[in-house]
Image (tube, rainbow, N blue to C red; front, side, top):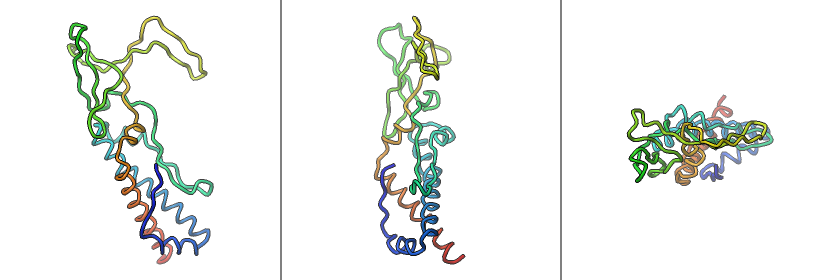
Length: 193
């Protein structure tokens, strides 16, 4: 995520500085809580509603890294792995040629539509989104090439790509709001508890 500048927290930050190590812990906890809330309440809902991918799948592709002494900022990391096209809301767009048995895969996307890598048979009974793979690379790095393509499920864009397509001003405003709320909650607990 991009850096977020918080306004209206000057006195709270001054208070955290005077608390020393306890203030550092409060700031780390606030950052972690804000990142978790941002992931759970804003990012998953926004990406799910715009792409049609279920909240469960979106949530599994977003990981929160806690703030630590070494890394004082919490982060929301997005998986770069593609999401299966069948998990998106998608439509088929017939292409010329092929006797009407080939169609492009168009997935719902942030702010519109996007072309996914693969094809489907619009005349088929299941209209399954497919792609062909002509090689496979093992975990040890060895690549096997095949003469004929193997049919596999088609992959759409990743959640990392979807995040990058989101308007940054909206994400920053939501992050600022969550961080401010988390910081004030933790400061109140220390001062009143």
